[in-house]
Length: 204
Image 1 (cartoon, rainbow, N blue to C red):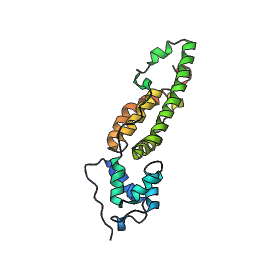
Image 2: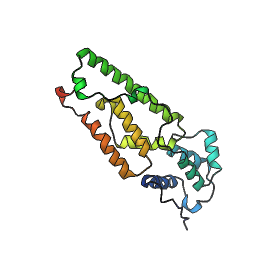
Image 3: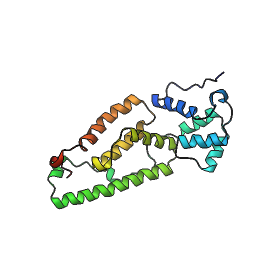
Image 4: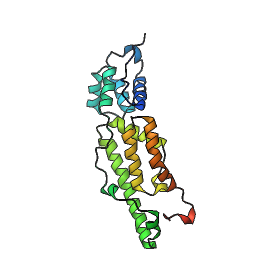
C-alpha cells in the first residue's frame, strides 16, 4: 500500500507539481517514503533538481528520508539571484525614436555595446547557476527560459532579456497563471523587438 505524502495547500500550483515530480524520480519511492534514501538516489535527486551535487552534499542527503530530502530542496529555493547583475540593468531602455536618431557610427557603437552586454549577461547567469545556493530555482528558471524561448540575437536588448530572466526566477515555482500574466507584459515587447521588418528596423 502506498504511503500518501501530504503537500501543503498553500504552496504554489507549480511547486506542488514539481514536488510530485521530484518524488517520482526516486525509484520505488512511494512504498518506502519514510525510509532513508540511498547514495545513488541522493545523487540522482540533486542532478534532477539542480546541476549535480558535490560529494559532501550527496552524503548529507543520504542521511535523510525521502520527505526530508524534498523539504531540504524546497527550503533552498529563492526568487532572486544571489549574484549581483551587471550595473547596466538599471539603465533606462532606449526608445525607437532615440535609436532612429543615431548616426551610422553611433549605431555601430551601440551594436558593439549590445554584443558586449550579451556576453556579460550570459556570464552573470552562468555564474549564478554555478554558485547559487538555490539550484532548484535556477534549474526551473532555465526550464521556463527554454519553454518561453527568446534570444539575444533577435531581441537585441540585453536589458529586456535580463528582465525576462528575473521574472522567470521570481515565479519559477509559483502560480502558473501569474507567471503567464506577468510574461504577458514582458514577452510582447521582446517579440515586437525581434520581428521588425527589414529596413524599418531601428536596430539595423
